[in-house]
Image (cartoon, rainbow, N blue to C red; front, top):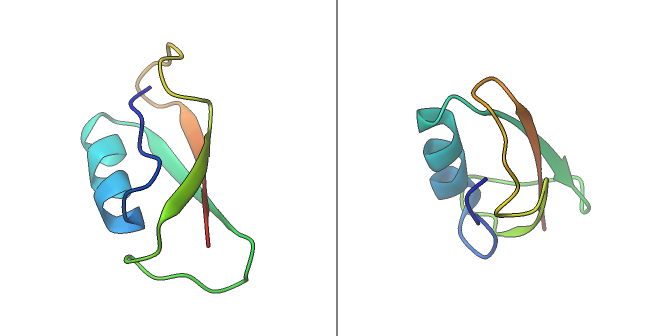
Length: 60
């Protein structure tokens, strides 16, 4: 799993989708855009995952 913390949601989605990873978004403020910054990810970076896995990105 690549580290996508502290980059924009749009950049993170592109990186993960290019790897065949499904992206779910959790926004603590209720609203987000492609320019929102990823503050946390599950699973954490450096965890081994396979194509088709789900990843949760937290944005503010």
